[in-house]
Image (cartoon, rainbow, N blue to C red; front, side, top):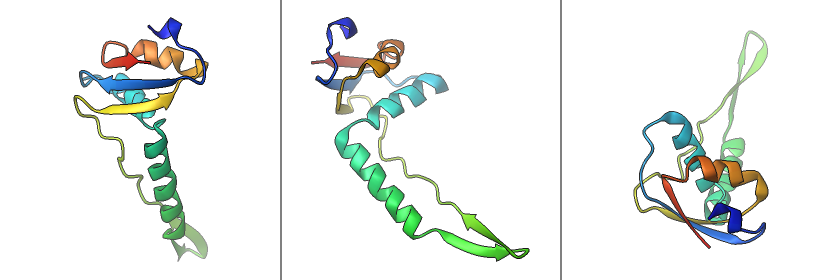
Length: 104
């Protein structure tokens, strides 16, 4: 299925099974971040974190208290997202193909 996709084409992905190993879990999460709506939420939260960063003085130096990024993309069975297909994600899609159903 992956070899029939063309760059720039919109791809609809559905999570069929949650991976138990950490590496495929991270790969699926990274692919979920490519959804335009999720990416917009991530950018918005990053701007908020930059605005609300706490800087304090410790030993006459500025220290930054960095806030953690929220988990916007949740991994649940049946979760769907749409993303543009690009050639650089072909390897990622192939590695998690048994967990994700890919449609044109």
